[in-house]
Image (cartoon, rainbow, N blue to C red; front, side):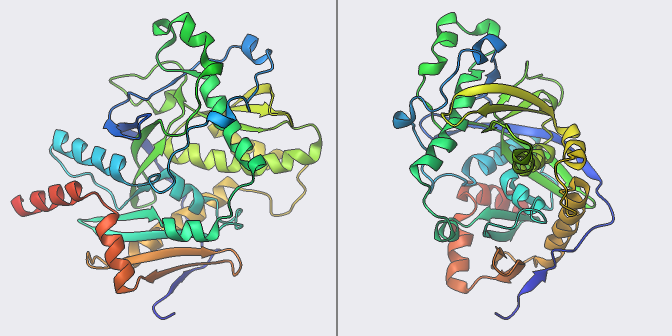
Length: 375
């Protein structure tokens, strides 16, 4: 394929200086799948030790699970709709080189140590920014349908979020709501998302990512990121070798939290029957040390978070440099796990036209064009 730009996986930047993430705005996706600006779907952590001791079944209610339509998940509607609202309220265009989802940047950040999965991203340039979004058709092509067992494992994570949170601060929640959490229909439609301004090196980045809950409260007049919590589930660690497998999960969790500025992670550990057995808290800043100091892992190529950040810094700088300032074209950023190659190439006209017409909400494009003509 002509015009292909390859990104060597051994590329590293000299600096890992990350711009401290700061929340710009937030948005929610309701139970009905509608996007609204604000924090109506924000949850609050509440899982006392006495509840953990009751053998919570994280598989209960699996048959009633309300799942988000994959074709509608990952669209820019709520994210960019919120950006338009933010810019109208503040009267200024956000300053950023790259605008994308946290999940996409997580895939790229962990790539030096996680190379099993295809990555297919659509990239466009519009009005001063590079926008990056998952290509759904390519994702479906490369993904295998999960088995029932795999679906139950994924469900257990959503169930844990459901039983570990309440919809309002604790002093505003009724006893009935607290006691009925285990009976609540679990879904992955409702979301609360934070959009932050961050970056690495000289590249300015705006990221949008889901936040599972708040630890205590969400401050009104200061950055709420230190109050947010990431919730995860994993199998119990009953023998030393399993800790190495858990390291890979913990590394990805670190990347997710670090990019968005979330400082606290809570893991629910389940047994083979999906019964919750233990809950552990981790500080995001301490995870790199845990990964580095695990005596069980004797792999000479042990996961190194600083090394991953150097790769991430080099990659985003290359993306910023390689994408032409041309609003009539679009590109594909692809990782092939078989050949271990990360490449960028221009999409053919027919596919490019579809990407250009669907990637960004029309109202946002009109808002920016209107702002551009009036300036």
